[in-house]
Length: 418
Image (cartoon, rainbow, N blue to C red; front, side, top):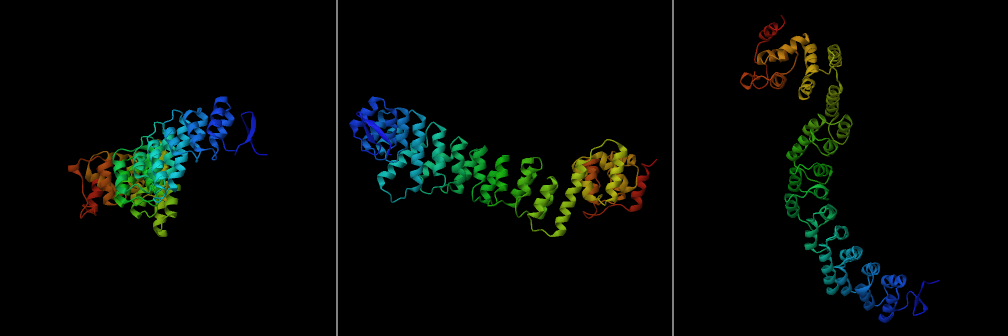
């Protein structure tokens, strides 16, 4: 059976046309239920809806604001309504209308809707602005001025949908917004856009904001220059939140993959390798080097016997090489480093410690040679472990080779064996 209401002492159908006078009588009677139904009903005459918008109670005005049959004159009253829910409902309705409006629509309807939209986009209540932003975020028919206002809103919940989805924002405008200091979720929203140019990627990366940089690297449609990726990878060394995004970034160069494998978890190295198109030999080398690094990081002991035993274990497993030693240097694992070089050079670890503490570039170079290391590793030992002064460093011959005769280097080490 159809819903019924009381009107002047008799029952009437909800769909029955209500006159202005009858609507006033319902309001004056205090019949809230009937007033609500009038406000919701699309068959209610426009002048009645206007009347309800003007003097109806809060809840009734909210229903009028949501009613698509409400005349625009009433909407213009409601856009400044003191009751928040009224403006929120009006924002929802206008938000439904605007994306479907075409330039050829009746000019009066379009002008009215845009006028209301412009006011709502500057409402003091963030929720109202948020409703508008969500409604028009993907529309190419939304007024450009409103999009620009919402994109620069101080509330991330308002700006973020526009910054992430609006097709009306140009690359230049987005770079300007980033340069103006947008932060947090709003900046991350820019980084998640469907298309990111190299210049925009540079601007986002330059902020050093971790969530935004992570979103940028995770965005497979973002065009990122190699040098920008290099800077992000350098940042990721000290920032665990960036480990997974950089490791899972598609189309990484082998050089960058090697750098990333030097600090991320083993599982991420495997994921990076699986996601790449590198050959099996390179993939195996990356995984092997990552495994070495992780074993170094996981080994903790101050016991000399433990360190010596671990060093022999590494030697027997074929793990002790230049890359291993360079990893120990990078992580400043000095006790383990001393013992590994000792077993590589077949020397007592006490001798190795004396040489590496001597600040003598020639002696440290001889020690590296004795351990079977390359001259470039000898230079790293001088600089980062031995702390040899710059003027006293022994440099590679022709940029690659040991500059001394083998007999001379053997003699240099004998000095420390007494």
